[in-house]
Image (cartoon, rainbow, N blue to C red):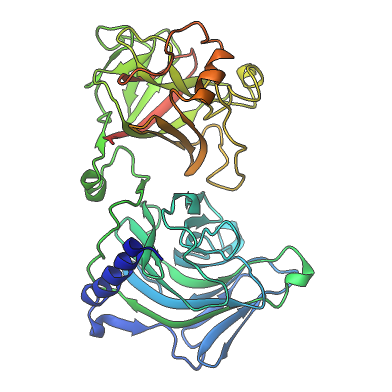
Length: 442
């Protein structure tokens, strides 16, 4: 373990004592029985063995949950967890519900992932049975913290809209979302795909909760996934983020060809910046950027085509583009080479990686998606989609120039290599919605 990680572990352990006084903690498990708990959904077994709650996988059952009888709103939860016999997916629900009139009582709500597989998404945050991944493990800057067949320390803080997780003393996720304010805590035994996976065990012990306590210090390097429209949290501000669109006016934006913001074709309503496709033209920032990080949410209508261009010159010339596209319906997805015109690709130059499946990750037309673009001072650029890095390249590298030479931009001198430029949102004649446009200088 690197020195920096050791320091974070030490700081967390010290902060944990300070943030919840000893008399604020209440046990969730008496070490002898399942008093205060009830099973909902599924038929996997839960039993008490040697002072631990042991859940065991069973063939032919959906996800099973052992839930607290009491509901909790704001809290700090700590526990230790170990998996044995064989690795299996699991998790811990919080602020969750099981209501007869919602999916016939299926458990739904926030879940902290427990994942001993090679992908190591433990600590990620998932909206069980609803919107899917808020914070996949791909966003965790410290993967590999969770150890199979060993006791792991876990901490979950849910205070107001803030949901944060720690694994073995290191912060692993940070989500700001208002979808859930109160509900039960539940221990999950996930369904299994193969009969031979039956009998795998998840052990929990030392479960305790504090309903009063100050939030722990946050890892300043961790990415904050804030789903609140056009909102900038205090932590994001400290990390250097600012709103690039204020959610209500054209301040800071102009026609990409110069001059005032378009009088038609773009609308600002209900906290959304909407291009209607009615000849408004592209818009760009008044400010120019060198090394920067950009994030925004976008919503495509069926068959829509748009894009986020960066390093744009003063007259809105063609340049590097994070493609926004309905791959299934728009013909452009099948043009170009090897899919280099599909969603999140570097348009006509480099295709994105194969997209992961799964709720909240696989893009859906008509729903909000999250785009992130990182362009560093050394020329390295990353495209992210819904929390997953799908493409990376280096401006000015031999590979980049080879790809440009094979593209429609081959005759443009020094294409994509200018040190500074504007950020542009494209009007390609289709309706597309934008919000939560944020930027920070790197």
